[in-house]
Image 1 (cartoon, helix red, strand yellow):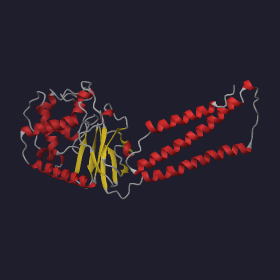
Image 2 (cartoon, rainbow, N blue to C red; image 1 turned 90 degrees about the vertical axis):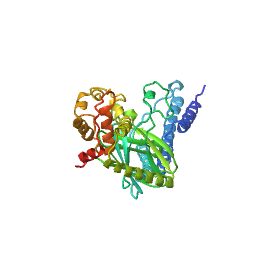
Image 3 (cartoon, rainbow, N blue to C red; image 1 turned 45 degrees about the horizontal axis):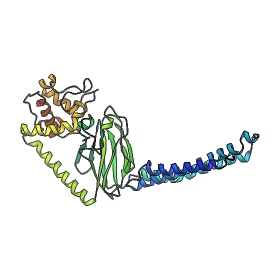
Image 4 (cartoon, helix red, strand yellow; image 1 turned 180 degrees about the vertical axis):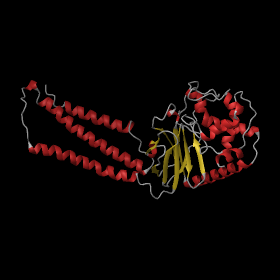
Length: 371
């Protein structure tokens, strides 16, 4: 029985599987022109590879069936065929050139961050992101907001498990935004598939990328670099909104930042400091020192019942402002404002039974940060 039809069946199966893969498991098309260019380039290269595979495997299967030993075929012997050698050199070169031309055009677009209308500094920190709108005096930290009960398995996981934050990065659509990316500690990688942006953030170095979003919406990603024990708890959420709505949002955040700076000069009540301090602690400190202050010794010491912390307020404040050399404790002098530092130090001095009755005012923190 002749088996000439079997290679055709195999090729049909390959094409069918490739089509299903392209629809169900492919990279997203995205919501930027660059992301669509990348997707188009990806599909072009993909189908070129499929065509090459069909030709190569088709010829191989045909040869196996047509010239098999059972049919009495005898192997041909030939060498130093100049035409064949030229042919199998020229064809791959032409294929590579055909791939390189659209790839080069896409790469030029990807790396052209000039003429941006808004600059955003993105700083990776274990394990959160800090966003600064340069020239707008607006900056904030973005932390994982998935409840710890879900992470611990005490509650069912939500729709966006480990991909939700307390403060998303808010951006306008239809404006070119340049990202300046760095890190305060180790290498991180800021990645949002729908925006086609994946960029390493490296300590002491500033990388550049850009985006121009076409459609409003919420787009999620995460750190794509193995940056430490809580690497999986470092999501990215971008909220893209209409330009008018963004202008209103940035104006509100500037006003709030101005009011926050004015709060440095007034005396804060103990209740205010404790309330604000708990919020800051849960968003910034709890990932290492736990919500109950018990920590994870030796890397992250307990704060509850920590005698050195209780006995020496100045030491405690210095470690929060300047960090601990050679340890995972970063300096928060450029991450938190004086009111936040004062509040979180006051909170940890008095929470979990520490009860020192000590309190720190934002003005005294400001003096230490900018003497």
